[in-house]
Image (tube, rainbow, N blue to C red; front, side, top):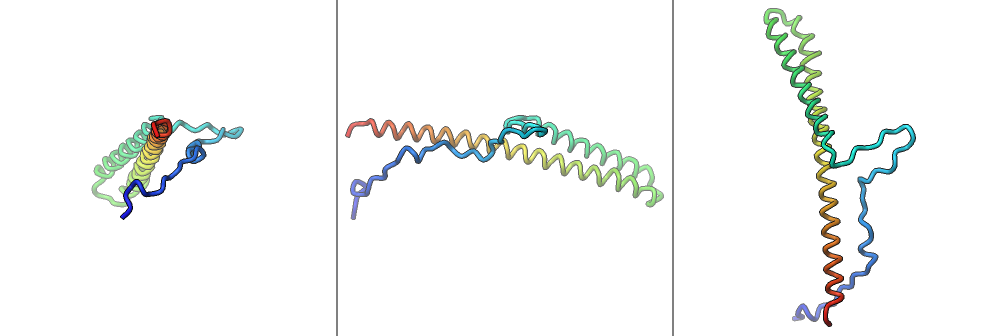
Length: 133
């Protein structure tokens, strides 16, 4: 039964630690295009919350108008369609904006942690290479 000392040594070459691939680094914006916000920016989260809040306000407004017209369903329908469904759409768009912003932020943090781990592994490899033989 071979021990761990009898196992072959795995060599790590310097080109194995090339610069990490960054899939979310945006290229320079073309002429006429707006630049992207950084992934760590809180602005998209605030915008998403504001859009969702506007949707809830619109739903509440439509509900108050429909509740005031309890007798006639034909008069309630325009409020339901224009206020309720539009408000529901705004809530869904706002939640989607927050979700995408949170995923971008998590991806950026994970990428930074991966780079820190790669740096620590490089330092460990260098320390092991310089150690006594």
